[in-house]
Length: 408
Image 1 (cartoon, one colour):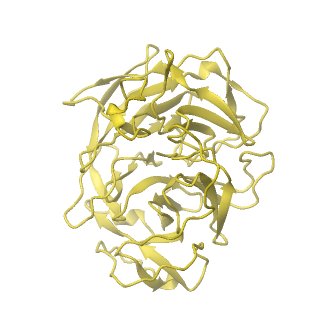
Image 2 (cartoon, helix red, strand yellow; image 1 turned 90 degrees about the vertical axis):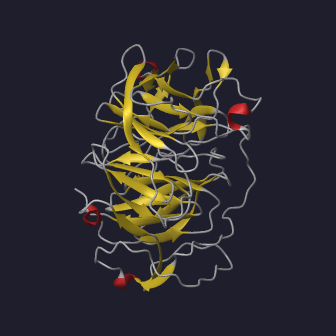
């Protein structure tokens, strides 16, 4: 699941939430015990981070898990994991370093990293004093923060209201609804379609006109499509029209341009299914997952196990809810890479490149769909966010990590 984002190419803090599964857990561990890090973990001095554009995997060494989960503090040494795989010459030039740095460990399932600049107002009227990244540990129902300048991290919102979620503040599989969280108060945005409860809202995005689009697959159910609790027979992409969302006096920050939270007009909204006219595809979108609005287009990830996922790009959704979608890219993992995970969160950078989490790590595509390369993690990688500090932040299974970029 994922950070809900506006169509702007800059990173966006999103306060529109998608919540799904059957209940929200209120008792949990503040931080889970650390789990085993991947075989590619190496210890190396921060000053020795290679500037060479190597595309080989990191050297394997033995590490010992800390007795207690703690954030990674700024020290002469730091943990690194992963490496770049260049498939088109020049891909490695997008990066200022070749390996991921791990910042926070000991999570259960990290999701929805979101960059929050200093001075922003998140959930309260009090502005932040430092740049930070907020993200969810969805299985413990806790939202965390990480401050890059100091390395400090910890619980940010407890409970997050995002049990089994895939976004920050929440894009979950908890209460099977889309919500707006204002100062800790939950305001439902969408819970049913034609009287039937939503499946498990997974990811959402805000376009330039203020419309909300969200995916509603079956991941919140143990038996997926066969689960008897499902009230909707199909996995859908829905739209909450901006016409049914009004401006509020709350001054929460949700994007690079300061603007008020748009609040749902209770009792007057309609939930429109987006009719995806798929061209050039043998099968329809089976399990829509990540979604991102960019330049009048919608990018949607179709999450299929066993390295069979793919992404489609849809033209502007018309007034009647119809969107023409075409294949954009196919999931593919090179030999030697652990194909763990599936097509999930995605973002588009200022040059129109698609950055998408999927099996093996982060896959990067040119605007025409050409595969450029990938950031290898060898672990399930849920989502990503562009930081205002020039780093790409990733939620990789049980850790929050980042890698320095060279992007305009």
